[in-house]
Image 1 (cartoon, helix red, strand yellow):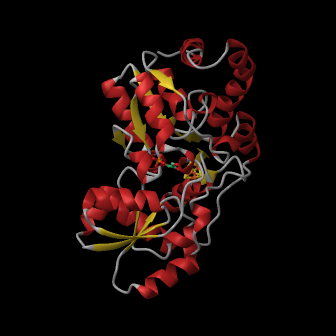
Image 2 (cartoon, helix red, strand yellow; image 1 turned 90 degrees about the vertical axis):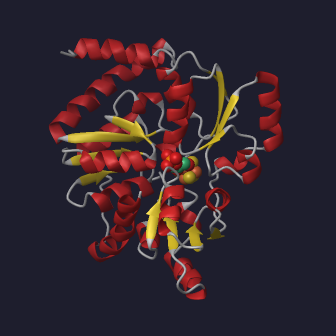
Image 3 (cartoon, protein in one colour; image 1 turned 180 degrees about the vertical axis):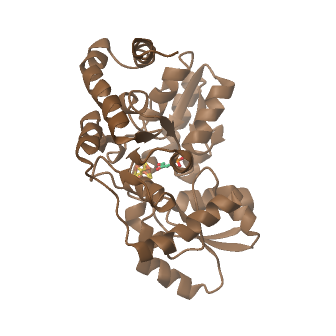
Length: 324
Ligand code: 13P
Ligand code: SF4
């Protein structure tokens, strides 16, 4: 049986691989408090791979990519789900689990991709392209999802577009994910011009020079620009990057994505040395242990979606789960 002291010792050992002892000691009482609140509230905490180790390892019951987070929440028996991620992730969980109380600890946790397109723009595109199926990345608002045929995440985008079996699709809002899908599937993809403010900052010449001097294996998220993806040994979702590293354990790696991703893998795979050209997502960093504790204590930050809108937005998510 895993007693609390055993759990504490195992957690401290994991965190010690990426954090100084003083930081772990300072956070320990808050981590204990959150664990107690989770039991009181019948709550599960689900975290994205970009959450800092104190959140992902310290209090989350599950950490993964945006698809795996939603699947975990769907299968969880907990009545309350705390989403340590950004708003579109919490909305996705609420759409799939309408009877659960879904809490987003930080109201500032948005996303530049979700903000780049409105429902009216989607209607406008579709009017110009009648009969062309529209695929929305989950990094969109519920109002945008309500206007499309199917959703996708970066983990299943290729499978979804191939499963549609059509020569042409509209894909929004990320132009770089859309380009990746077009190159990999050969489908004619009509893209929206959105970009992720984090992944768009990588520069190919810089990556090439780090790689040549270090021999590191380079992994890139498909939200990176095409020229950056071209410098990588592997392109995939955050979950796919983690799986690649767990399986192959290269001695040195560079993750062209958010900085916390490398810390989370380093806790599990201490033999991999990570080179750190990485960028921070200010939205992901808005979630802190203090905010998780406050959300559980007061049940604030609950996601509410108008029921008529929710019904329309749920349909493309359900189709995604059917097709993938
Ligand atoms: P994943 O679905 O790959 O976890 O990506 C979500 C995201 O927001 C990346 O910036
Ligand atoms: Fe949005 Fe980019 Fe942050 Fe992901 S990393 S949540 S796409 S802003």
